Length: 118
Image 1 (cartoon, rainbow, N blue to C red):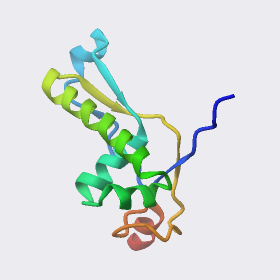
Image 2: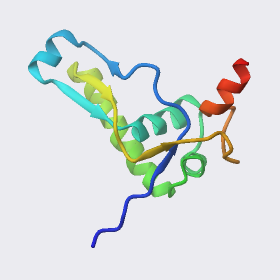
Image 3: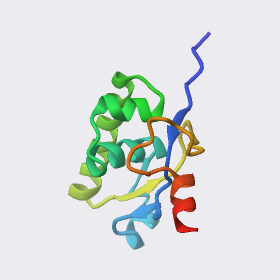
Image 4: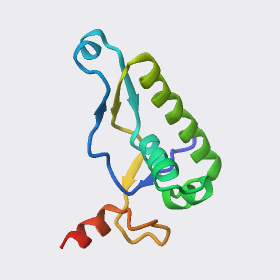
């Protein structure tokens, strides 16, 4: 029996879920799917400048898991840029953070951002 997957904590969903040339690619099936947790590792490591260890704490997973997810995400971003594929961010094994996580970094959680806007 396979071990059940652990839910990955995600603090923010992407504002846009589709990137790249879309007109011909969608018709020709030249699409690349990126999971929400792959997006989250790119956001935390490259945009928020966290280490893989800090990213792992925030997402509530092992550092080695972050390393694998991050590597997969970078390959997809590169393929989208180099080959002109449309990148679609959707799906995965994640749950949205409630904003009470002690490892939330830089006020990046959805709940914290909503409270700051009030």
